[in-house]
Amino acid sequence: MVILDVKRSEKKNEFLYETTVKVGVGELLKDLCEVHNLRLKVIRMSMACTELAKHGPLRPEETRGISDDLSKVTELDVNAYGQPTSPDEQGFRTGCPPPPEVAEVLKRTAQEAAAAVDVALVGQKRTLDKKACQTQIDNMRGAVMIAYPAYHRLPVYDPIRQELEDKEELDGASELQAVLDYSQTNLWWAGKELRTDQTLEQYIGRNEKTKIVAKLAPKSAGAPVREARIDENTHKAMMAHYYKKQEESKKLQEDEDDSYLDSEWANPKSLKSALVGGGRPISYRGGYRG
Image (tube, rainbow, N blue to C red; front, side, top):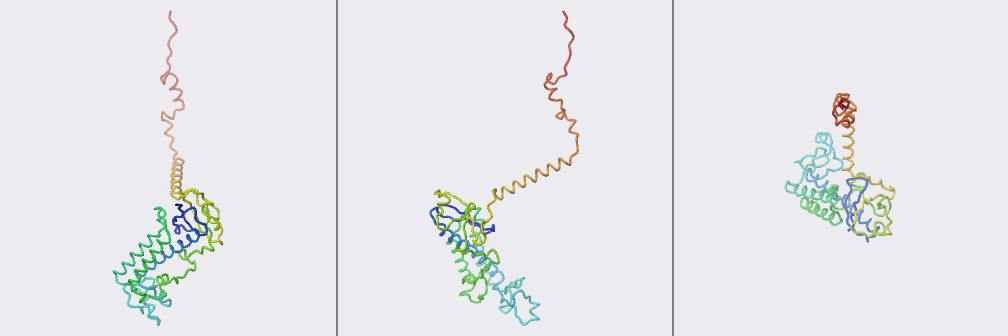
């Protein structure tokens, strides 16, 4: 099977995808966009579930960010949902989370979902697909239903309810909202745009045991930035080596001690002395006596 290391401009939005060389580029592009979008949805839901378990549902828009002291001089009741048991310091949530044992289920499910789509999977060489993402969404849906059966006392404007009802705001204001429309997205590999009317085999060959780095980019954005020739760890090691050499060079330049010139190994005539007479002083003997 062919392994695609799918990337975008952000390092966090990276995952591995498994496919075959026979797949059409158009079909592959659609699947990659769906996995990318589902992965972002899982991350958003995980964050929303965690906050819901900590501080309860979101406040109405008109009372968000208002402190208890400020509410005394306004007609707005920030505690209309109930008396806070876990106040939100930012004032965005009601401070009325579900019971501790249910909140723990929400937190644990959210953590498992986040880990299932984390970018660390790339380093572990684990692939991601639509089924795995949908499983985590269903798990979090079940946890929310345990805490708020049939969305009872969970406002329609709460982020997790909007996600579960597919009514979330996707304006692209953050990287977690930057979903892709496959009809407006291009797939790039080796600096080339892959045409949707061709197969992957026409680009990478017939070898199924291949791993390539593919990039998803909007059609309006043009070609993505090419990959660096060396990986991040090698780059760090090279920088550390050059820094060490630079520091050693600075120390040598600052060292003005020339006492080493008195050493035997620094004698410029040591080689000649070693070759002539084996290093022994040359002696003169008297003339021939008959």
